[in-house]
Image (cartoon, chains in turn yellow, green):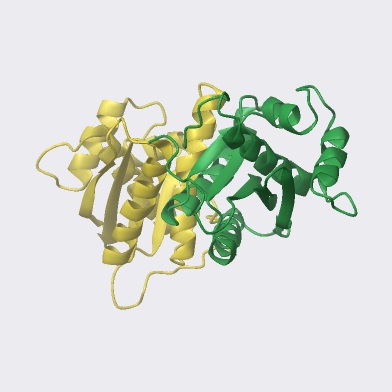
Amino acid sequence: MNDPAPGRSDRPRLVLGVDTALRKTGYGIVTREGRSLTALRFGLIRIPANRPHSVCLQALHDGIGAVLEENRPDEVAIEGVFYCKNVRTALALGEARGVVIETCAAAGIPVYEHAPRRVKQAVVGYGNAHKSQVASMVARLLNLESIPSEDETDALGLAICHLQARGNPAGTELKPL
Amino acid sequence: MNDPAPGRSDRPRLVLGVDTALRKTGYGIVTREGRSLTALRFGLIRIPANRPHSVCLQALHDGIGAVLEENRPDEVAIEGVFYCKNVRTALALGEARGVVIETCAAAGIPVYEHAPRRVKQAVVGYGNAHKSQVASMVARLLNLESIPSEDETDALGLAICHLQARGNPAGTELKPL
């Protein structure tokens, strides 16, 4: 099951990073040609705070589904969760993650997890970097004129991390969820 | 947003109970006419243990989606989770729940949560009942010839609990997720 999705031969590999949450999910599509990274698109899927839970999950499904359909990324990178404040938060975050993973699976696009430490390592160079350092480095690596929101830079960072792991033959084995 | 789904006028209300899990999800559809409860259908959505995570979530989506399409229940009842062994379990359970909630939302069918204690109360008469008591009481209330599997009786119990809450005008307010 490893490495099921080599980039299509006629274009560089597109990776969609998703920073999953129930109320506000960041996403970003990054591609690499040679050493140059480009953000094709990034944004937020926002749901007004007073909408019921099921509406949030449906909006997340539809929002990610639209990005998959419009941009047809080759692979998706999400954050590996190894710590959560409490069971309630883990359950809510799990619900959002489940919807994202299933939406990608239904579209035939493999999803990979990357630990937050690895994302920081890939973007800034060390795993304990501050969020603000990650954000400005993401903007620099992608030649963006301004720094996107935190959820967007987290998503773009995930995509960059995944592309780096792909480009590193000595890197950790990549296994889709 | 309360009570958005009164039973269709031409048939009694159908309630789908779902006992959500990643590897083995029980479901059961119960209807009530007068005081008589009937199980229209129950079963398990099983996924072989060695399949990847994303495949399990997709199978859960497709399995619940098929039941919704074939039986068009009016409402869905799932278990309210208030305790989980650890964050890892909560996250995995959340993923499965998220997929079930989203699948129902996409089909326009409201989902309600019931606490495990309330299900036991509704089926057996007291909230600390053993699982085996719940199972045999579910079989008795539904006039089943044998006792279904634990995941199926949990699902049928959720549907019975929901129908009881619906039929009790003094009962707790029902609010969909």
